[in-house]
Length: 242
Image (cartoon, rainbow, N blue to C red; front, side):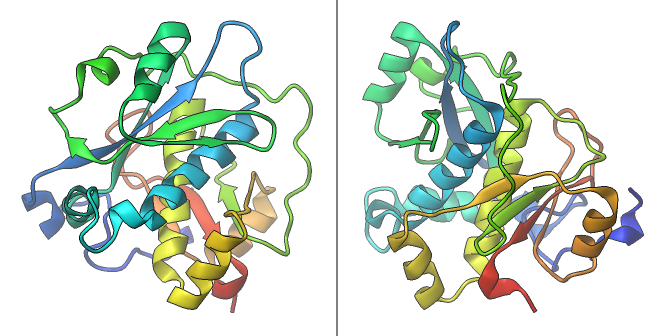
């Protein structure tokens, strides 16, 4: 996928691959932890949906807004690069993570993702710092259902290969871009509906159509796994379709 296939992000976008003024701000990260036991792991698509919904849930939580207890951290994070890191936990590790301040979101098929208020890049709590980033390679035991095109869809680039953990972070980015583009009324409706959304990988022709649609596009900064500037997700929401 060459760069001219996708519209350029707006100036100052936290998802631009090149330097921006956001890089001068202190850098924070939004931690997400996937509950991954050795037996009965979650399905990949359900984990992606749960990660996206976890991001939307913390963005809209009253503790993240106004004078809420997480609001300052959320503002600091959004003033810099919107980094997200997905780690995995099982057994006692998961129980310790679940005891920390945060929100657990459960997917339609049982995937569990816990999201925590943003932290400095080098300020991970010990309960999360020791959790592994690698090893989140998940599969769908059955082909995922077709996306609900009447609702929000996070479209994944069919030409970019990423681990499940990396893809979960990218799905979170896409959900956040859609959220930022919506009006307060549209956000309220989505939140009250429980943040329904689909995650799907389109065919090559449909992907080209989406890249020309004007919908929000996530371009990865290239810190891990993929090349800087790679287009990973297109955020599709009924209110954003033109």
